Amino acid sequence: MGKPETATGLSLTVSDVSGQKVFVVANAPEGGTVGELIEEMLGKMGLPPVDSGGRPLTYHARLEREGRHLHASERIGDALQTEDHLTLHPNIDAGRGA
Amino acid sequence: MPNVAHNFGLVLFNDEGERVGTAALNVDWEPAVECARFYSLRRGELPWADVGGAISILPLWDHSAGEPCCRGFRVAIARADQSPCVSDFRNEYFRRLAAQAAGRFVESGLLAKGEVFRYVVVALEVENDPAAAESSGLAVAERTPTLDLLESSLSAWQSQAKGVGFVDTDDMPLFCPQSVLDQVAEQTLAHRGKETGGVLIGRLHRDQSLPEIFAEVTAQIPAEHTRGDAVKLTFTAETWVAVNAAIKLRNRSEIYLGYWHSHPVFEWCKSRGCSLEKQSVCKLAKDFFSADDEALLRAVFPRGHSVALVANDTAFQGLSFSWFGWREGAVHPRGFYLKADNHAA
Image 1 (cartoon, one colour):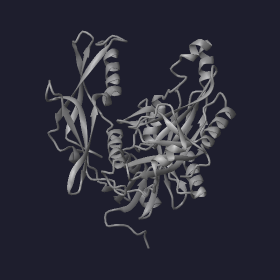
Image 2: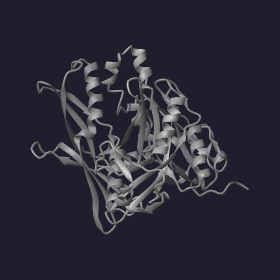
Image 3: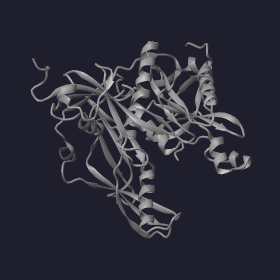
Image 4: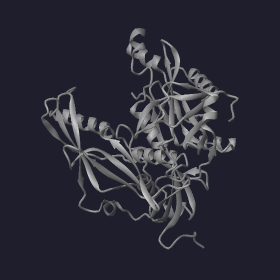
């Protein structure tokens, strides 16, 4: 039997690092990749896609159910189940800068 | 995402008042929205357990020049059966974008390097529905996060604490115990010459009689899995996993309040061969928050109650601390209340 899902995609919860921004996605497409989901959610969640120098920021999606960071290339339908919770974790710099 | 029915842009002028050119603005409205939302929460105008209604960005027309010239913009947060909560922002909000635009005009030779410029903000109504143009296939809704708010007396807390630095009454009151600063100092000195850091955690309190919300730093979690050198500290995805695990292990209903990191200023000065006299007036030595520092606060701690702490490690006066927080949609130095460690109001 396949994974439970809605008629149009998976229902997910996505939050930022602090858990103070929480968004519910009603229809994450099973055929899409985790990387595509992250990219789209950044805009929806008001998270910056670039650093102070305009370089792309890398965000990793942590699947709380499995306690691991997903690869950007993983297919949503393969890696996720409906009602899964993802947390977006950026790699980001502080400091004076070179 | 806020509803923005206008395209904002800049008209730049040189020191002579001659028009240099125009630039479209790709504005990050989030800091303004967060500040507006938190200001309304502090004043009790928005319920705590509610992310609020639809948010709109509205241009404020310049009184003398009129439309399309702006004197600023307004953030309006809709409320059920009440007028919206509004916060107004001045054109200083666009200052960094104006500097970036000026840089492009310098590159193209239309503005001399170092030349003084001024800018006028303009807003033009969008002909097409921006929401429709930007909409994707994802159906997304914001959910109110679970954040505990403790009922407390602000005056009781203030009576057992000491204001340090300029404590602006417009800023959310912030309390931090000496023990946290001691830990920050210890970690900074243990990694001397390299940047190090951690995450500040704590609790939010509300004094309904005022009304006001204030924050209490309860601990700092040393950031693990970071990559640090003399000028940079990288917080990685594994850093956040470790911090989350530490917060859960402590099990004290604490939340993320912000982050801290060290600035090994003496090392920066040494590499530049600066004299002690020069170091003592260097802008990097105190209350310096870099563009990277601000970008981290923006990306990870965008909420209006978020704060940052910098440990300045200098050669001329040892270690000092600088606090920063959100004000009017930008990051500013701020004061705080040093709390007695045994205080539990």
